[in-house]
Figure 1 (cartoon, rainbow, N blue to C red):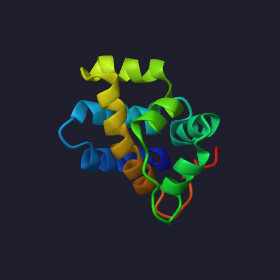
Figure 2: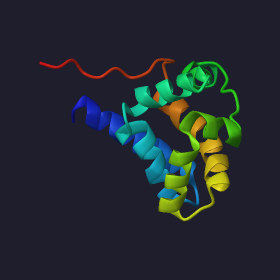
Figure 3: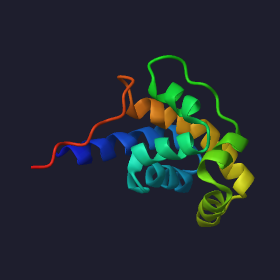
Figure 4: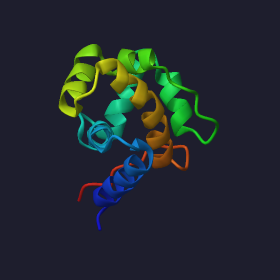
Length: 124
């Protein structure tokens, strides 16, 4: 199993653990941390661009995770992206933001157990 396959398996495990009663939302979280633009690094960049770099860094670090609000998730991901996710999972965008505010910190924390973002394997 290659590095990227291992990262994907870790992400799937974390998402299943934390998405609870909304498995379709779990798939959307997978898209955010794995398949989305830039994967987990891209998600970090979105939070930084939204002025919330300190928040996602707390989830990455080995210290305690700072809680996220639904408004902060909306600020980081943008209203359009939240509406798109909500439409795909059949939930209100505010509900999606609230659920992501619980799921994302746990998943990001799980994917960064050493307090660092996983690095891609070098290209040969």
